[in-house]
Length: 250
Image (spheres, rainbow, N blue to C red):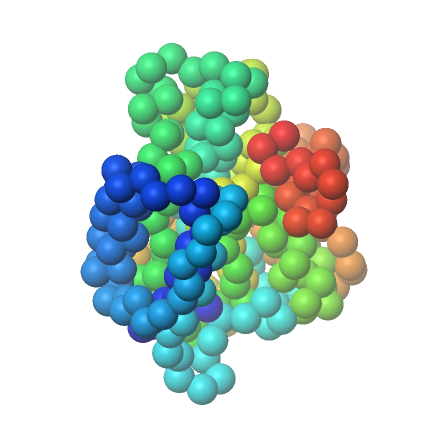
């Protein structure tokens, strides 16, 4: 949301005490905390089924937070980084679409050690009109922005940024991993036409690529177009937190 990270709380429920597991968990938690200057200020430790709940908090100047409800018709829609690699890694681990060792090594970190786009969010303050991170899939998360903003959107499949590994696997994977599976934690954001030049000037200072994938429109709904200009209908809309048989990873 364009905030500067400050502190976090951690609630950890464990079925038993496993010193080796705890050491690895704490090492990863504190490495990320130090990188972003986050202090662990409290939480809870309890016995029970494994459950990890983290609340992250930060500071943002008044009226500058990157919210979901600011997109307007005519705004340009962008994403950071590439999409779908975390899904490829998950599908491999679940035996759904096996990768060779080199390909899996290339995408594994995107699933198990995603890197928060904190710096990018800070720099987008005053430029982006709305933003969200892609955790539940591009279609689902962009859909949240559109619903909150009261607009629709058109996006073009040919513009979606994917990795070299994804391109090589495309014949088997198709567009679904990049559109619906999530866990990429890239940013999807909208920019008013008057601020596009400011975004382009900012791009060299960002830590990743940004890609224009479509635009917001006045008519409600999210339309996905293929390279021929025909409408593409995804098999799933993305992860639904309250469905009994949620399709995250499907």
